[in-house]
Image 1 (cartoon, rainbow, N blue to C red):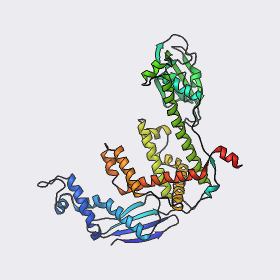
Image 2 (image 1 turned 180 degrees about the vertical axis):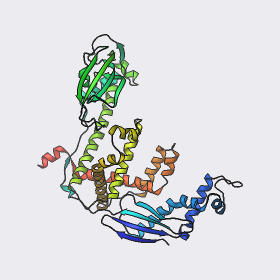
Image 3 (image 1 turned 45 degrees about the horizontal axis):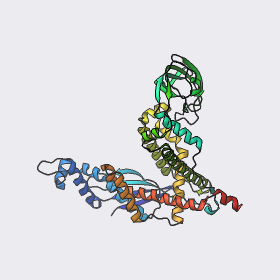
Image 4 (image 1 turned 90 degrees about the vertical axis):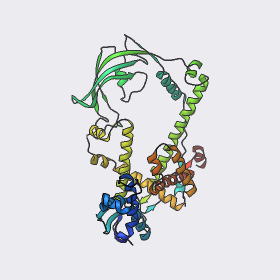
Length: 435
C-alpha cells in the first residue's frame, strides 16, 4: 500500500506519496492497453497486443510514463481522503522518483482551506434591480437596424448627419506611430458613437480629399493599457463620403426582416432588449451581493496555490476571448508591451476577489446544507452531452470525474446565489415601507 508523509505549513500541506510497483501494476496494464491502440505491432490487432509484447516494443519506461497521470490522480485522491484534509484548488504535483519496477515517489502541495467567517446575512439589504427599456434606447436600436440596411451613395459635399466616411488613419504618440496605429479604408459612421469620444465630431464637415489633424484622449478603459487615457495625435485622410439613405420604418421594412408588421417588429425588438436589460440587472445584483459579502467576510490567509490557480483561469479565459477575435496572446502581450509574468501579476487583485467569492459560496453551501443531488448532476451532464454532441473531445471529457466535480461546483454556486438573493434582495418600495 502507498505510504504518505505529511508536512504541515501555514497555508498548505506537503504530502510525499510513495507508490509500490505492486500497487501501480494494474494501472500499467491499462496504460499498455491504451498504447497498444496507438502502436502497430506485426501479428496483432491494435488494442489487442499482450502486455509483455507491448513492453518489448515500446519499453517499460514508456508504459510507466503513460500510466503516471492515472497513478498520481488515484493515489493523491486516496491520500486526501485518508488524511482527512480539507483542500481547495488544484494540487501542485512534483515527481521525485520514477523508474520501472521501482517505487514512484511524488509530492503534492495541497492548499488548506482558509477559515471563512460570514457576516449576518439577514442584516444585508440590497435593492432589487429592474431591467428597463426606454423610448430613446428603442429609437437608437431601430436606427441601428435601419443603418444595417441603408443605401450608400457617394457624395461630393461635406460629411454630415448619418453620412459614412472611408478614411486612411495614422495615430501617433510623441511623433511615434503607436502599435496598430495605421489603418487603411477605415469606415466611420457619423450617426453612431465612436469608441474614442469626440472622433466623429472632428470629421463632421470633412470632404473627399481633406486631411484632418487633431488630438484626442483614448478612453481610460481601453484594452491597450499603454493607450488608455493617453492623448493621441491623429492624421486622417478622407477618401470618400457617402450619403446613407435609411429605409422607412413601415410594414414593408418589417416583412424584409421576417415580421408581419412594424408593430410586431418593434414588439420583438423590445422583448429582446428587455431580456438583455434584465440579464444585466441580474448580473449587477449578483456583483453587488458578492462585493458586499467579500467586504464583510473575515478570511484567514489565502494560500498562494489558490491564487495562482485563479490567475491561471483568468489567463486562459483571456486567451479564449482574444482567440475569438483572431488575436493571439503573443500579439496581445506585444501590444501591451508586457511579459506574461507581468500580465499575471496584474491579475492579482482579480484573483484575490474571485478566490474569496468561491470561498464564500462554499461556506454558505456548507452552513445552509446546499448540496447538488446526483440526479440533478446527471441531468446537467446529459444536457451538456446533447449541447456538445458533435464534439468527441467534449463527450469524452464529460465522462471524467474531475469534470463532473467542476460541473457540480458550478451548479452549487448557482444554488447558493439563488439562496443569497432570497435573503438579501429587497424591493425598493418594501424597504421604504420598513423605514
